[in-house]
Amino acid sequence: MEYDLAFIWAGLIAFAVLVYVILDGFDLGLGILFPFAGTHRDRDVMMNSVAPVWDGNETWLVLGGGGLFAVFPLAYAVVMPALYMPIIAMLLALIFRGVSFEYRWRTQRFRWLWDWTFFLGSTIAALCQGIALGALVQGIEVEGRAYAGGWFDWLSPFSLATGVAVVLGYALLGATWIVLKAEGRLRDHMKRLSFGLGLATLAMIAMVSLWTPFQDNVYFDRWFAFPGSLWSYTVPVVMVGLVFLFFTGLARDSDIQPFLAALGFFIAGFVGIGISFYPMIVPPSLTIWEAAAPDSSLWFALVGALILLPIILIYTAYAYWVFRGKIDPDKGYH
Image 1 (tube, rainbow, N blue to C red):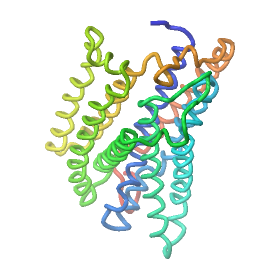
Image 2: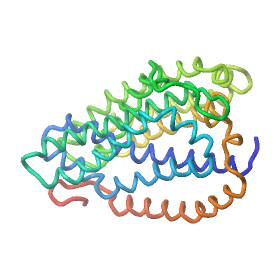
Image 3: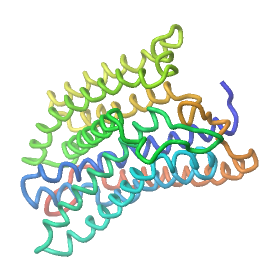
């Protein structure tokens, strides 16, 4: 394994993407669950639970995408043409979702419209993120350091399956977040939804995990060829422990345990993808070293990252600390 600037930057971008997924995941999940909330009051509580932090969560998406452009320009140049349609659809959905977040408080007559816009924006954004991930996993055709595929290569049964898996997973994060932050009838309703969403999410994770090794021979070898498979098998072992924690947390009526276990599902899945991918940044052929910018550019960007990352982490942690605890429907946070 080579520990150099390209490797460090691959780790930083992977970290930014993971933090985005686990932070904005429950944020998007709330929108996906909007139609399942019983009343406008419940939807107000759901939205208020993330009002102080939702826009800060988007920072990590910008950091991941901007970092890819700055330090892995070849990967960016290949991935963007391959995934233009799902990425543009995701960005438009996030824009409309952000607009609805603000506008639904400004009207009574058309609040229903902004509720549906919030739901559709969240669902489409989550679906497109999953489809983009599936398209990347199944491989992008590269010839002469450029994308060589077609407009709709991203659309396949496998990418649609990963899209549905991400939608269900984000909805699970949203439901367990409300279990953590709300009280009374809304919390009980989301707890019931968490059980079914947990089963559905785990079923999709299992299906996609069993499907992934057959997308490329490299993936198959990573997961089934000894001794490398010893590392790969740690992921399902960890998942078994997380499943136990998730369902025992629901049974014990714990506030935080189901949410942390659901986050663990995503972290374990992310590690599994990393085991399959490394050292490729654009499967099946483009490695992180082939896609990296010159060392001078990597050093320059790294200096800025080492200054900005701690600041972002500190203000993110501080925001979640300030707005910890339960949310009151009338008074906001306790």
